[in-house]
Length: 299
Image (cartoon, rainbow, N blue to C red; front, side, top):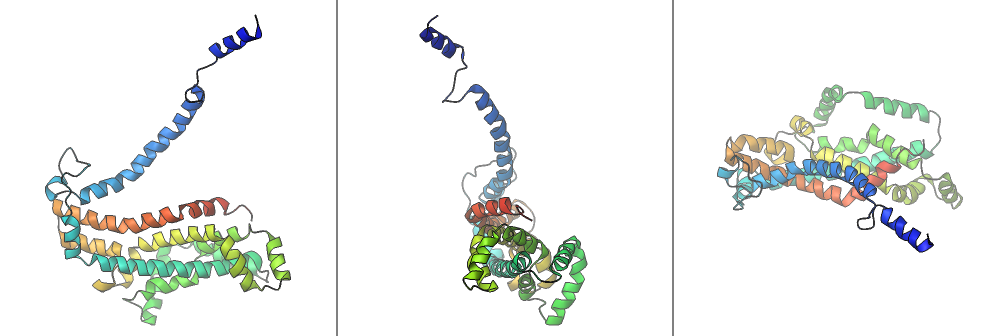
């Protein structure tokens, strides 16, 4: 048999390819991506249902079978939302608290993390161990002492009680940033020291720019935690004009009453409360993934 006939026979016996891929590879990729697609649909469905319910007429929100696409679109739920509660003020208060607390925790935690990662001083390892040990304290243990401190400072019914503690950092964020800063080569620090840069200059000009993925991770986690916090504002805030979105939605649920009409209004408020978090995560997704992937590569 000639070489040409052998090549034709081999091509005929080889498995057919679809779009340049072998059937085995297509089946393997399908077994990976189909479960991921199902999980993605399950994750995004509550958000789509929230949007759909907020745009439905009160008479069509509880019908069976449920209607995913509202027909017609009913925008009065959003109008009624702002008529029954100062939703714009709630969003402004939550934004103020979340942004300032995020700035505070990024600044304070990054300074402490830089000190633990690069500054060698007596007792640094002991202090770092004590810091990590505080992560094991349950949150309920700190409620009464923190309330007494805030009351002594006169910060009850004030946003300062929710913002100022963030400027003292947290054990988890310090640990996360310290692990990331430890991955920066020591040669960079030595070169900057030879050029006459001090510790603060090295921190500000080298570690902060190189640590943007970790800082973005800390910022996103803290912003989401502060934005969704219900317990803190419930303890410290009393005035209606100082409420945040989570406690404002609870207040709105009581004022809206029960029934299909109230469901649409509450869903409209919940959707407005979710949108800023979705925008933030979409903008910082790349840095968030990089920060989680690179943290802990070096002890």
